Length: 157
Picture 1 (cartoon, rainbow, N blue to C red):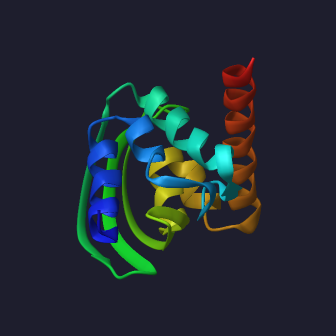
Picture 2: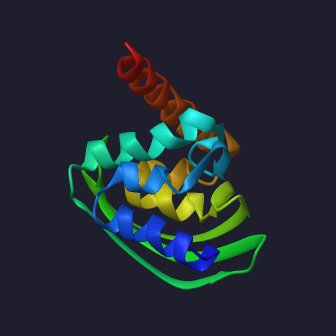
């Protein structure tokens, strides 16, 4: 499988709600980073996708485009449309992804998106007023990681 096909498999699995299909594209040493969770490694990165898809119970629409890859690196653009579970508000998140590969797996995955735009959609007025601040962005990461830690502990018990 080429690295372009690996990225396509990752997002096709995502679009189908198949978290295990997604995480099978990752190496066990995966390093993931995005504005909502910060840096995650290994099982925490894999569990993030399991948690997010489990929470949305199929109520997430994923599209992806511009998949490019060579033997070492790759990229793609993707859009997630979903209801943010904490507030019940609709979010349309436009994301750019960068990848690094080794041994037929993704070893690094970095998603970038406008966290302020996301916060305005997810939190409404509170996000509009505070979403641009490092304080609010830190709180978003704290809350996301607390949820992930709880999910991982429950999964492992």
